Structure formats: structure tokens, C-alpha cells
Length: 182
Image (cartoon, rainbow, N blue to C red; front, side):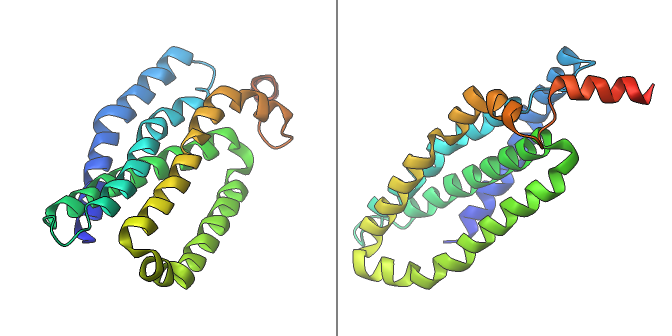
């Protein structure tokens, strides 16, 4: 059941290289000499977030013994695909948004992701044994649905949030740095 997650991830990387990377290159040309707004990176996260939530429901409600194992197996492909696009989008967004302190910002996100990664196995077995795969996956899908708006909110309010941050460079600061360098 884990192999489709890997295969979905491979397709996601290919999709990123074929679709999103060329779009970003065009965006750099369009915005030159200014940097590309970090919110451009969120487009593929906005596409992947609903797929991620759907894959949990798909997995849970096709896990009946009477349904072919291919159905939940394919949901793993969708999950792997969406995980890679979400990770790449948010990873690149953090880098673009916090240029000079990106290492610290990424360290913070890594610590939080690791805490959830370390904590989830402590209750996952009990969750799936108590609720059964259908309801446990429905619960996780519901949590994923609650988080689906995050990239959309960042796309809309990201520039305003970055202006309020003392760590995220604004275009004026970037221009001042260029003037000092020349």
C-alpha cells in the first residue's frame, strides 16, 4: 500500500518539472528586475490541497473487504502526488518569503513537521483500531479539509502579512539593498 504513494510522488516531481517550473521561469522574466512574488509558488499547493483531502476520503471509504484493493491503492497515488506538491510549494514559499532568514524559517517548519511526525504514530494505531479505517480516514480527511484554505489565504493575505513581518523583506528593502550594493 505504500508503493503508490512513492509512484504518486514521482508523478508529482515530473509534473512540477514540466508544468510549474517553466511557469516560474516565465514569471521571473515577467517580473524582472524585481523578484517574483512568493505567492506564485502557492498555485500548485492550491491545486494539491483538495486532492490531499479527497485522497483520505477515497482511501477510507474504499477500504471495505468487498471492494477491490486497487481502489484504496490508487488513493495512495493521489496522496503521494499531493504531498509532494504541497511540500514543494510551501517549502519554496517560505524560502521566497523570508529570503535572508530562510534557513531559520525552514528550521522552524521542520521542527513543527517533525513534532507532528513523531506524535502521530503514538495514537495512529489506536485511532484506526477504534474508529476503523473508514472513520479514521474520514477524520483525517476532515482535518485536511479544514487546512485546505491555508494556501488560498496565504495567496490573498501573504503580501500584507509579509509587510507586517520584520523578517520578510519587502520590495522597498530589496531595492535599498541593490542600491547599496551598486
